[in-house]
Image 1 (cartoon, rainbow, N blue to C red):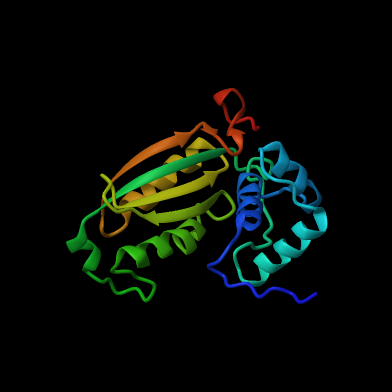
Image 2 (cartoon, rainbow, N blue to C red; image 1 turned 30 degrees about the vertical axis):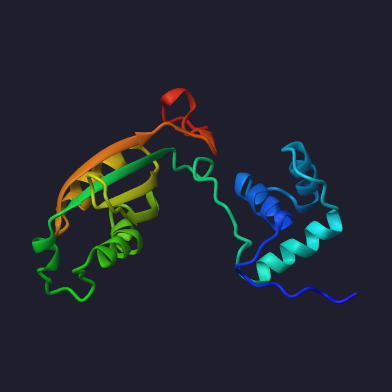
Amino acid sequence: MARRKRKSETFDDRDEAIIHCIEQDPAILLKAIPHAITDRGGKPIPYPTVQRRVKDLMRVGVVEHRYYINWSKAGYLVRYRVGILIDPVALRKRGPKSDDYETQEELALFIKKKLAQTEGFRNKLVVDDVHILLGASVDLSVDFYARDDKTATEFIINALRQQRGISNTVSAKLAFSSRYGWLSKDGNEHGS
């Protein structure tokens, strides 16, 4: 039997069912996918077919194998989202440092890779991601985990707000996630 050639942009109903199953539970075991698909009302897919299709989806880069870190269990007990308003004129005034930035993209990378690694925040805070937003009331959004609220507050006030080009921030402590549940037990910092 000849193996079918897969084009990365062409997926059938079985591929879509597998992709959405993995999206709903990224830690799902391959052997659990057939059962999960039928539980959601999908047509049964035999386990060997799931194995082959996931392997094909990985080969074309649609599905990736990654490690997941449970930041709460690692001691990073609070999660924040910070909206950042940019002053475009101040952002473009390049400073003397070689690691400086002058675009929103460069600022986003600077916050994720360098600012969170400065002396006061290394091993106390992890920037999960920085997004450039279009059509929102803020220009960037920063999601981060911190060991405690004090570290989070110091990062926002003493690091983010002090950066050239940032004119204002709006902060929110995240309490619940549809994917992970409550992000801190009983709303305090004593873990989930």
